[in-house]
Image 1 (cartoon, rainbow, N blue to C red):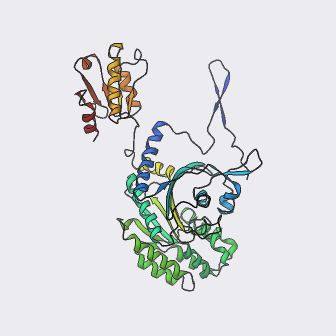
Image 2 (tube, rainbow, N blue to C red):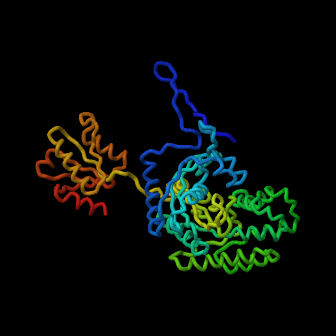
Image 3 (cartoon, rainbow, N blue to C red):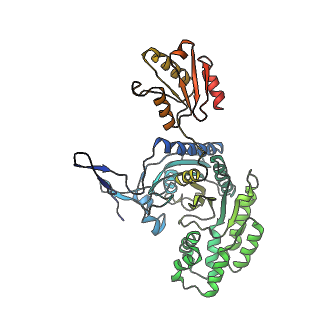
Length: 459
C-alpha cells in the first residue's frame, strides 16, 4: 500500500457574512495535544525515564523515516501493510517507522563502537495505518527499553523488573505481567503435527485469542485442517495459565508430550522466573500464560505482556527476546531482549482509573499584576521565585479588563495551584498574599521567606 500523504479532512463552517471558510482538521487517527494533555503525558514520561535511568539505560533517537528496505520483511505481511510508505525526490522508497525495534537493529549495525552490553531506551512516535479505536491511534508514542549483547536470561528478567517498576512508579496498583516463550509455540506446532513454517501463522492466530476467543483462533487456522483431537490439544494449551508456575509447567509437559521443543521452552521459563526472585517484585502480579503469543516475526524466546486491570484497552506493554533481528543487517549473531510501553494507552488507563493522579499543570504559581504602581514589585516577585526553581507565570494580560478576580479565574482555568497576590498593601509591607487555589486559603508571607515557605507548602 502506498501512502504519500494522508488527505486532510476539511470541515466547512459558515461565518456571519454567509461566506464559507475551510477549517483544517488533523488526519484521522492523529491528535493535537493541549498543555493540559501534555501534563499527564510529561508526568508519565518522567516517571518511566526515572526508572530507565535507575537501571542504567541510556537514551538514543532515530529518524522518523527509514529506507524501505530497512523496514520491509520485518513485520510479516499483516504488519507491512500498515507501514506508511512514500518516495523521496530521488526516487528512493522510504517508510515511517512502524516501531522502534527495527530502527534499533539498523542503529546497532551503524554504531559498532558502542560497548556491549548496550542498555538503551528510546521514547519517540511511531506510525501505523491501522483502524483507529479507543486507545489505538495511527500516530502514537512508544517507550522502548532493550538490552543488546546478552544471551543469558538474566537480561530478560531485568526487562520484566523494569517494566514492573515503571507501572508501579506511574501509580498503577492493579496490573499483571504475563510470561510465555515462543519456543512453546514452536512446541505446539510440533505437537499438532503442523509444518515447521506454521509457527508464525499459529502465533498470529493465538495472538487474537484474548480479543476474539477460541473460535476466532480456529477461524484463523481454518486452512490447517485441524482434526478434533488437534483442536482439543490447542484448546488445552491455550487454557494453561496461572500464578502456580510448577503446576503450569507440569500441565504443559503433559499437553506437549511429543514435542521436542517443549523441554527447552519450559526450562527457559523456569530460569526466567528463578531470576525474577532476585527483584523486589510482588509475584501476585506475574502470570504464566501460554495463550500469549506476540504476533511479530522476530521473537525467539521469552515473551511478556502487561495489562492494567479495569482499563479495558488491552495490553499497555509487550516485548520479548529477539536474538535473530539485530544481526539481520550485519550477518552477526547479536542477542537482544526488550519491551515497549505504549504511552498513549498508559495515559488512557491513568486518566480513566486514577483521574486525580498525575500532573495538572506545568506552572507552580501565578503572580498577579495590579497597576503601574505595583508593576516592578510583581516582576521582582516573579524573578525571585524563578531563581528559587519555581515555574512562574507572571500574568501579562490586560489588567484593565482582568482585575484580581479575572486573574484568579485564569489560574483556575489553567489549574495553577498557587497564586501570588502582590497589590499596593502587600508591597507597602514587603509581603505577598499566597492563595492556595484548591482550598481557597490565603496567607501573608514576607518576600524574603517566600521561596522557602512555598517549597514547604508544596511539600
